[in-house]
Length: 222
Image 1: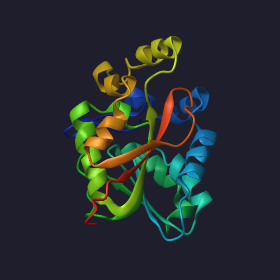
Image 2 (image 1 turned 90 degrees about the horizontal axis):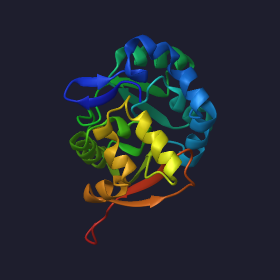
Image 3 (image 1 turned 90 degrees about the vertical axis):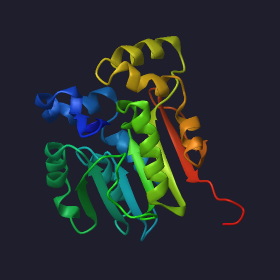
Image 4 (image 1 turned 60 degrees about the vertical axis):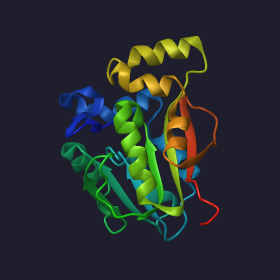
């Protein structure tokens, strides 16, 4: 969400407008995507000691904070395009400075070498991105993951009920209806498969949010 890439060097500020950025964490709490939600995602990630972990679209650092609490023995990197939001994350993560690095950058052009991470996590970011940027970002995630790494994608999927569809479609006014289209159509698993991943859903949906675990597809020769 915060500082999400809209393509090129543009991005959507937290809550769509920079003036609302200070209210972002409060808004997530009210909507049910705050600290308890991030703590649940951190537990689901099952980070192991010594692993290199990338939080793609790290926002204000709440997920990184939860990840460090679950596994302080791993190394974490957070990336996002909005320097003002990253500044909030730096203040939040001051005590974790030795295990967390924050980087300004975009999902479709990750400034990391090939196979740099054991785990990439993205939470509520991809529904902000146009389809071509989604495709490019999935390719970049595939590139920076180790061959036996994993990608935990937590984002909106096909709404389970008509009411949920109405609510999510109405909410897409902040993110752009075209950006939400693939999410609401349930197309993210197919996009991941096309990028070279094997995909499974590993948890029950939470308020329309799906939890997809994607692993790089390994050829028999590998």
